[in-house]
Image (cartoon, rainbow, N blue to C red; front, side, top):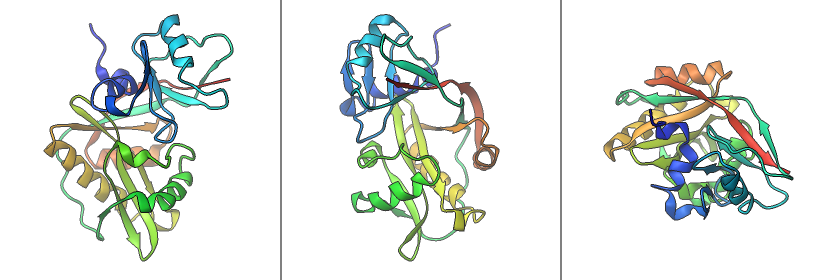
Amino acid sequence: MAAHVLDNPVWHSLTTQHAGLALTAEGAARYPAEIVPFAGVGEPTARAADQLTSLIDDAESVFVVGLAPAPPPGLILESKKPVLQMVCTGRPPEVPGPPVRAMTAADTPDMVALTDLVFPGFFRPRTLDMGAYFGIHDGSRLAAMAGERMRLDGFQELSAVCTHPAYTGRGYAQRLLSILSNSAYDRGFTPFLHVYADNARAIGVYRRTGFTDRATLPFWALHQ
């Protein structure tokens, strides 16, 4: 049976809907470092590993979801905490709450600061190039945000779902996810997301918003 595209989401994103953002070598591809530190290979071969190495600077780490090659000499493939991949099963009802607005490049410093409270290093200066991001503000403070990351044929990943610690428990994440999920369905994409498999609180929020477990995938860091 052929593997599902969601078993290797970075590769299929970079070779379909996000091909215009991709840095590629034969059998390997990555996003530019200023967008997100993710890379993928089409097959777990030594050739693909060598090609992926040619796309990585000496001092950086890239992250691989699901399928990963054996590391070539000089690089380490470090196993990180596995991620649970969840898929939305249908249009969620819109969750009432405060106003939501689209984020722009001018909001990038606030977005990086907020995401660094939850998952430092994954949101970059050009992450907004990947898709739409929305935020909820309390005055000038960014209280919560969420947006679109990987996009592959038929599927849209939702990511950067985070709420400032002073605003948790108010349903902001569910409100943002409902808006983003319905927007994805409007454009013909099924929403999906990734969350660390041990993050019970976040998983509960996602399940209440209509996401169900699809698979637990290995998560790797490739570095010197």
